[in-house]
Length: 185
Image 1 (cartoon, helix red, strand yellow):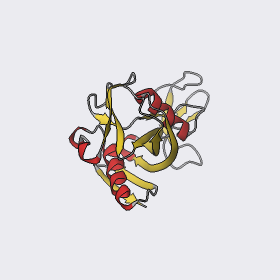
Image 2 (cartoon, helix red, strand yellow; image 1 turned 135 degrees about the vertical axis):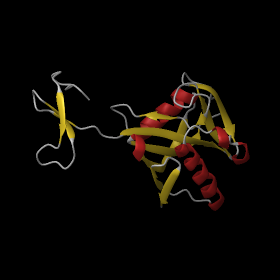
Image 3 (cartoon, helix red, strand yellow; image 1 turned 60 degrees about the horizontal axis):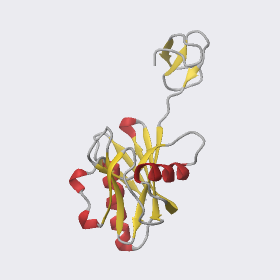
Image 4 (cartoon, one colour; image 1 turned 180 degrees about the vertical axis):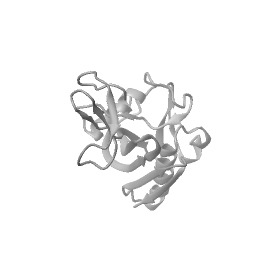
């Protein structure tokens, strides 16, 4: 950050009085700018023994498979954001959304919230950010072509939990190096 988004003046990077970490502070108006993690909300849509995946049409990881998810918008809940992203990316309607994985992606300052959800019907298709949308059983998942470690984690947890018949909330910390995580049930 080089300029204040309130007055346009230059900013400095230092610890403000009463704080414990460096922040961007406007040299003119004194505004302290807090840069906090972004929230990603999405769904793990299920129909019978299959899950719905989307093939990405945008970077990053174009051409790889993922769950329908994206950044939350202002004025919506995480559940609303997850359902909206599923509709936008897969033209799929979901219900019975239950928070399933809560992942802190430390290296990129994101928090991902994936909701386990039921597909309302089989009327789904690729949206603007996808080239393909398909239902996959566990043995059909394109494991080598998944876009993100968080998606691999959510799917791995889901199929393990499905065998046990219980779906607890999983708290996952994804830290450097990418691919390693600690599951704290």
